[in-house]
Length: 347
Ligand code: NAD
Ligand code: IPM
Ligand code: MN
Image 1 (cartoon, rainbow, N blue to C red):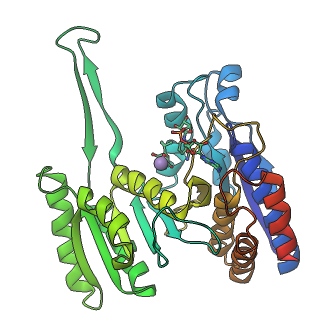
Image 2: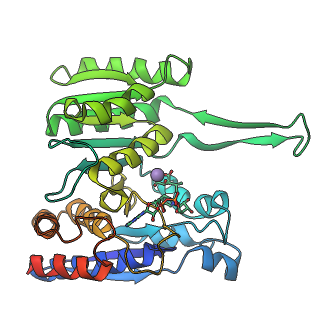
């Protein structure tokens, strides 16, 4: 029997609840599918930071490298540790070290779930660049606290980085409805975003079967609300993709529905699966976090591991659950009730 080694990083806040829920579903899906998942959990979090002075041990990346995949809940608890420390100490270094350059975020309506839009057709795949751009971490502050203080945060776009994320998007478009939207702000940002547009145009010549359109990020935000049916695959930089995918989640009916995969397409290191949402301190410990985003992310993990049938069973179970109205209305059902319903739909 095949066994996959999974590193579980529950992280902070609702991260623990939603990864427990997803793990229960994934284990059941593995039982049914005739394979097994071996989990090792690591308590790396803001509480861990308070005990050890770092978000993960110095050999954390080395440790994670030995796994087939990583399932993560959420990182961050601003009242305990500044976000600039916690996220740059755990989540962001994993994405970069493991070259998980494609952040794949599907947004579509689940049966029975109400979107704030009157859209009955909403199905887009956001491909977010995940290792560079606005999240380069390059910059600094001078004259701190003084009237003439200056803060600089440099976006870094490399030809290799832009080309590979766009290419990934083109391949996804080929497997879907054949449309690719490339998102920039090249009317205002005249170096990086013009560079991105040029690479988009060059690649478009290699993919004559794909209908390519470039949009500005502001217009794209409006389009996602006003004409989402005109979109298929949307490729965006790190920051723009971050913002568009919370918007995508909102259109799906809430942050508790949006799944995410940080993919290393070359498979030279593990990929990482996590919901789009964060640790939700406002509802942590209430038992009401929606686990569907994380269960869906778990299905993406099974798919990535090659367990296509099990992945599709989990998606069918999620859909059967929301179709019955369970987990479909944010705030109505407890985490446990939604998880139990998905488990029984699997059986
Ligand atoms: P958030 O996503 O945690 O919460 C935003 C709102 O959505 C809150 O009202 C929350 O209650 C609600 N929400 C989120 N997930 C939900 C779920 N599963 N079910 C029901 N409601 C849900 O965003 P935030 O408040 O800006 O961030 C909180 C912390 O999480 C910060 O430290 C932030 O940096 C971090 N964060 C981490 C990740 C990650 O680890 N990938 C992602 C986003 C934010
Ligand atoms: C996400 C989150 C992270 C990001 C934060 C917590 C650094 O918002 O995964 O969408 O911006 O990538
Ligand atoms: Mn985000």
